[in-house]
Image (tube, rainbow, N blue to C red):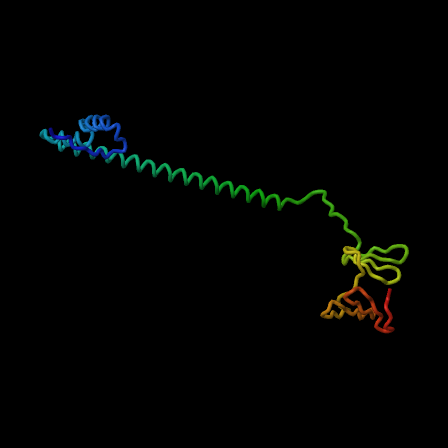
Length: 185
């Protein structure tokens, strides 16, 4: 007895090969498909009808493609025009808002440049310096003694000399009068 040779079924759905074979037979008999057209080629004049059908199908597909391109181009142009109109309207509104004169607007009154106090002290609001009646100046932002930078000589170790008041400020915070060489408390 002869053995049955093994057959390799090269299909992604190998367990369902019988169903696939039946479908392909049905599709091959379809007169509109490629196999159907070739079967019709046996009859006289059927090649001519196949070519006519193919031409009609190609014309139908080209019409679909052309309509799709025209519709997408029209949509893109429409969207671009709407976006342009929106930008123009926004810009016109912004320009009109800036050009309208404001009514009943009084600018807020700021502080005076220098405020004088009853005890002889004064406050320079522009520079942020308070001058006490004894002549000492305080930076109102930091609360520390204000020293005009134009009268300072800075040294590498962090010390500096106040040439206006003749005071040497050491890095550790000690103050020395440069005229009398006495330490200032």
